Image (cartoon, rainbow, N blue to C red):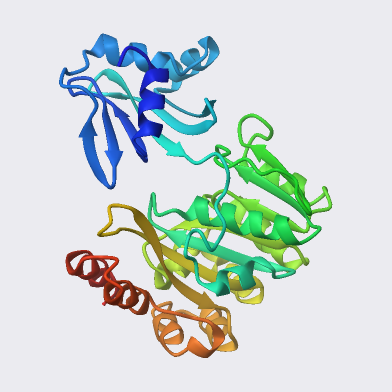
Length: 342
């Protein structure tokens, strides 16, 4: 591959999810969950740097060389790419996520119907949780698009970076990118409260100020959607509390109990077919769940989910068993995931 555009075109043609540009190795694509070399020859440090710098403007190169890492979105030939450029063993390299240009629908993602119900709530907080690269942003984009398709609502998103571009349909979607349209998640969220929103979607809750403003917004009658990096729902409370000072714990617990509508926890699984699909664990904020949130002991949330089927809840074990019975996933994958939920 002579340049980054050729690499992008080839990745899209191969249905790749990621591109890896690394000195000392061939450029590689992740296809159906596995790395696949694009060429036999290894990239020299100079060639790796050349390909990476083709993705950046002169100003972005200056910022990258100053900060040693740089994130950006690039639109090319009808596709979108989320790019991280960094130094690896002293050489410049990049990881590129290949994105579909438009958000998918909840049905296309095989999400449970309760996800649509949560998307249509008038107020409160809906969290999409999971570890890195589990499709949280894709699910949130699907929820936004679902509302935008059937309701006349004003939706403001605050993202870093913008991954899916939303067109106005029944409603209005106004997207703001951190670093370009607003300085931080917190400043963008604070401004959004003055912009007459029905829904605010926050790309990620990653600091106490953002969490505090998001909870306050949810309490005042706005629906807030956000993602949170956490390995399981029962670790959610501790994760949120860990961002704030010790004396804020009771306040955060109270606000979370008052505002939470539900949590969608995700695992992105490789299918036998070679494709990928999300498996979801759903928690609805029932009276029992709110009681647990107010006091210590997040491990009790596991019991609440297991006994909450009539409220629309489902466990990861149930979803994995269903996918296994439908011969969508292998027993090896099922065991690997369920070991984390035992």
